[in-house]
Image (cartoon, rainbow, N blue to C red; front, side):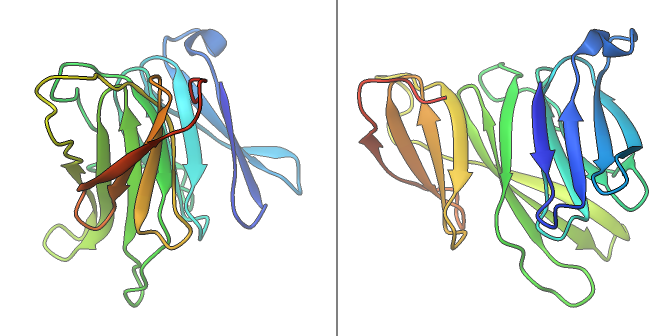
Length: 200
């Protein structure tokens, strides 16, 4: 259903349909590219895997699914890390369609990671960082706000990316425009038309 390649080129991930293993879970295969062997088979999504992307240091794999979960997987041990599940969006829709990493922020031994996650009608800015209090990595999220979201044009997000400097999240919509959000404060920065075609 989707493929991801780590920045180093060492790892490859592939999302599988729920029926691949016959247990109803969408699985993710992680491959060692040089050895052409399967390192891990990851199962945590009840449904299809919609996206899977590695962090820039190859340490983490983020996955999104049709069940609304956003999971962060530790590539050192091949397991889901704690605090990495997200539920339905504020409008009741649960499909987490895509996720993309921002540039890492160095913080000594444990970097701070930021990513953007696209649901059908909602964009979230998430921070994945180590907590001294819990002695583990935790995921915190902020919903991006759109002015006048109570009425008018409804946007359904299909795809997204982060600018090279990590300051902006750009999301393509079914209405044919690109919506821009600030990663720092999850604020709406504007939108522009992409043409007559839907972005996907």
